[in-house]
Length: 178
Image 1: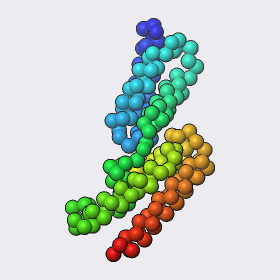
Image 2: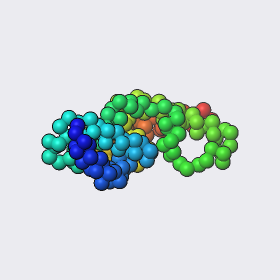
Image 3: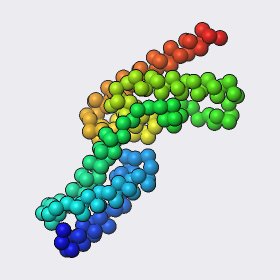
Image 4: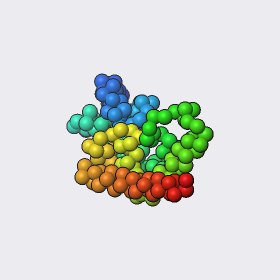
């Protein structure tokens, strides 16, 4: 890449850095991850051969960022474990406020929910975690996972129904055990 092309790419990135990071931050839980992905998008744009032929460089930069998000989420299998479920707080109780017995019951429920989530297909898990943990809307999940909104609705409904069924089963077991 010529010095002139590098200068144009650097200016493009400088002019769009904040907007690009906002775009990425809206799709990631951690702002530091957004900054890293923005930087990676810039580096990939710098490595693009014949960048001077790109008709819409700003759109191209954002497309690179979208592809990076896709790589991040497809490369990171979102299998659920008990630690992840603890991030999906079903209620805002601090564990220090719980009695040891209640804390043990809560920990057991979290393991059971993790087990229920792990029984779901990966895309269903991912949609549910993005909704519950990251608070994304169905539209945002659809964009991130590159699915239709209707498919996201189906995944969320299936995942929630499955988890509710498991929780009812757990509650029935607890009532029977007392």
